[in-house]
View 1 (cartoon, rainbow, N blue to C red):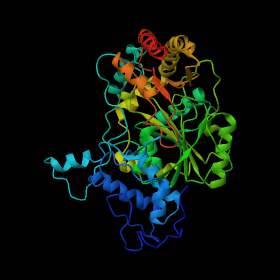
View 2 (tube, rainbow, N blue to C red; view 1 turned 90 degrees about the vertical axis):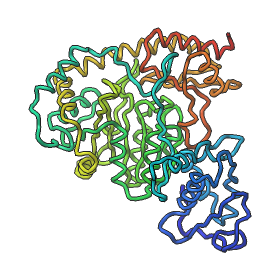
View 3 (cartoon, one colour; view 1 turned 30 degrees about the vertical axis):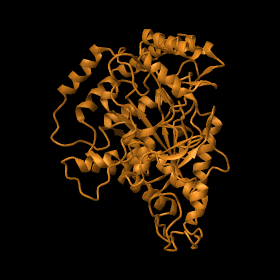
Length: 497
């Protein structure tokens, strides 16, 4: 929660309002102004970020505790805590249990490099922190990487026929419908109806370049500096998009049933959740939690972004209704779907299903962004959907991933109680939760030495304690690769050579 703008500020010695220098060990002056449109926590975050980017706050410098700095600034502790949380979320600061909050290593590198180069960037330009995404996979080893999909199940003949059909389509002399071709939107509406039980029409469908672009379009609907509920351990790129858009994150605690929604959940303009298969923790949001979230949205006049991540891949677990299908008025939920995992991320194609009242504004935003999706891609996808190839491909791919999942389960489940699998019922990744004295970062380092590459949850966590777990994405692995990697994981965890 953010402290009220009119929170009383002390003006005694050491206060930034008194004109006297602060006694803090920080090597910079901080100046917070009450009565400004910008909230106090945002002012503090902006000044600390600028100092870190310029190098005035050097990498590794430990910042004062939130209570100490709040007392010195004459503000509530929540102001400092919210500023710190925002800076941890965008990578400027890093918080480690037992070590406090420090300036991230490399926080100033981007700006220094831009000024040192010959590009001649303007003095006012401040380069952002690097995007929180994984780089290209290096050759060699076994990579348990989240966010990738197999193409081994792709019917190459059907794939080539689809692109041949696209090549035969009339070459348009304009940009086409910025919302997407009507026939493709109708086909996608039918697709989510049969695959996810979500009844909708073409008029509520917007073709996008993936779920991340859809989120960026939605963020344009919000007033400046809106508050957004976000899973405490969640999708890094989505979190960064929200921060870059100037909005404020409020963390949602999570348990086995998904995000925790109670009467104490604070108001916000929007909530972003991944209910089908939480990314990265892997759990599924229970129906009572889904209904509670919808009640929260109605109470606070808020919107919900339902990122249906991995919704097509379930293994024995019954499908749960989408939040969009549970929305009684059809006015609260914006549903994000993607064909990146269904077919290939190379298509860069997804779709957004939104309330009718919001669609014109979303289409306007897409028009001003890039005028819409490439027509040849739309024509090829329409062919794949109309011929039933997408549905057949999903069935083949589900069987493929089920085989990989079975191998991981067989090898890793016996590691309990030292290591426990989570999120195994659905999706293309699992979390392996470790019990003390095992440490996820040390285990990941040892596995890397053995040619098995996994991730920890450090960079996915922006609030609370980092779960002691390994993130194992298996969408791009064969059964053999998964088995080889899983056996190495088992050896490291059990202490065998």
